[in-house]
Amino acid sequence: DPSSPSPTFGEITGNVAATPEVVTQSVLTSDPRTFRRAIVLDWLESCAAEHVVYVDPSVSHKKSKMWPDTLSSIRSSSSEAKGSFDPDTNHSLKGTDVIDEAELLSACLQFIRAGKLQEACDLCAKAGQPW
Image (cartoon, rainbow, N blue to C red; front, side, top):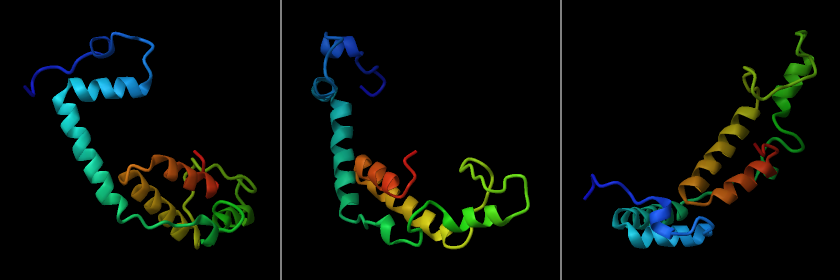
């Protein structure tokens, strides 16, 4: 019944100290809706995995640091922020940094859609953006 609530953690395991694997297995075997959703998710991820195009950040335009063109532009400006760059501020990317960022985000999205979250995190860290 789609309107019935999903079982609680305690109802599923009866054990508060259960490992994530035990909890996952318990949920999949006790809730048919969750089991069907997991099958669909696995299928979608496997389909997406067939089309992942890996982008190596070491061969992109930014060789040794993140957003070199943007950082250079900020450092050469006459504003108060001269010499500093906070990625959370409202600076627009300059030059090849726009392409590099788009390639990185596209690759991350491909990895995430394929269920490869760790690979997406590793790619970001390798590109100098571990956050």
